[in-house]
Length: 276
Image (tube, rainbow, N blue to C red):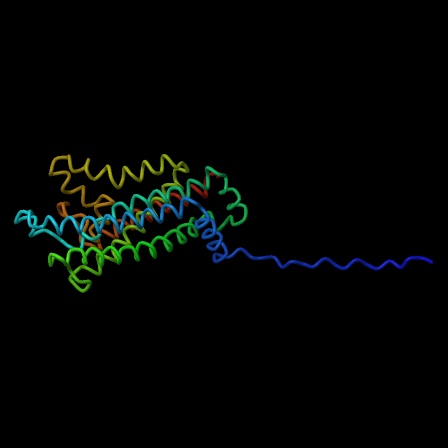
């Protein structure tokens, strides 16, 4: 009795998934949140931003009676509560560099370029994920810093309300400044493709050049320092009080964004022109 052979069932066809910007962004977000350095950096940045702001507010409240008349006249409770912004910039700038330079040190960039060649070569998805994450977190931290700082200052009647002139702009501006500064860190990581070089350049631009420029003759420094990236961006939240001829808040922020756009274009150009 001969066996009856039955045809094997046809293999199920798996529909091909198209590469879309949404899927690329989701992939970048998965990589971003899965990094151990991301969680630790975000936690450190939050603690520093809120804690340093609270510390400055408490110290100023307790020492206010020892201030000179000039110091009392220039005291700003809003910027005192946001004193931790500078430390958050350090943390998020380093995180931005690590986000891109880590792609090259681990070789992950090759897999990304193979899976999403066109989208990845634009640097857009990585920047979108980073900017969205950092803006939301820094905005929350900025509001907490402000209200906590004002609560500490209120014991000596030095506090300001969120409706005070420039208060809301400073709180939101601090988050915007942190976000754009972090994006510059991302682009430096993409430009140098080396963690040490990216972090060193970021630190030099934001924390070394301003004091060095201040050592120049006044005829030069007064016209140079307002246009440095850190001084231009800090005007938005009131952090550049000692800068002569400081730009207006939104003009300074626009200049900082201009620096970021130039660096983003440079990083995208290098990614398109050179091998990973």
